Amino acid sequence: MKLLIIEDDINLASTLARRLTKQSFTCEVAHNQSDALLAARKLLPDFVLLDMKLGDDNGLALIKPLRSLLPQTHIVLLTGFASIATAVEAMRLGANDYLTKPVDMATLLKALNTEPVASNVIDDAVMSPERLEWEHIQQILHSNNGNVSVTARQLNMHRRTLQRKLQKKPVQQ
Image 1 (cartoon, rainbow, N blue to C red):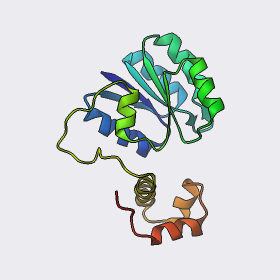
Image 2 (image 1 turned 135 degrees about the vertical axis):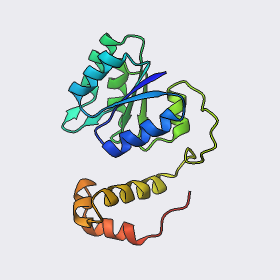
Image 3 (image 1 turned 180 degrees about the horizontal axis):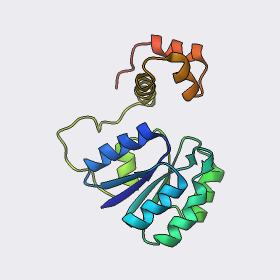
Image 4 (image 1 turned 120 degrees about the horizontal axis):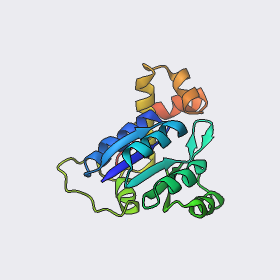
């Protein structure tokens, strides 16, 4: 099963690709609209995970070109900015499903209409939103070599708010 992941957050895209590869998908990742259309033509995926916000672009604008290029492909729109209006618009344009971030693996596999592959790895366990936020903050902080100010800017968060979150112990799953 071929899957195209269109996500501008490089860390999230690589995490999704790694986890979905363990679920028997062949994953290709694109981080912007032009790369996404090129990858779609080359890969001809069975499934597409499409982020609604691709940098300054809107992922909704990709649904029609993807649908005309890949009429049988199952398109799932992922968004951190969920609203009824965008959900309706996504379905009207041709998306098969609409999920809000953060999304757990079981929900994502259900949206892709597949059963989870048995795995000895426990990292596919459902994480709480608080734990997912903690993990994401730690990942971004690590990629910025511990620089709290840069990390806060990337997360669109006030520096003091980030410092408060970092002082808390990690949330248990």
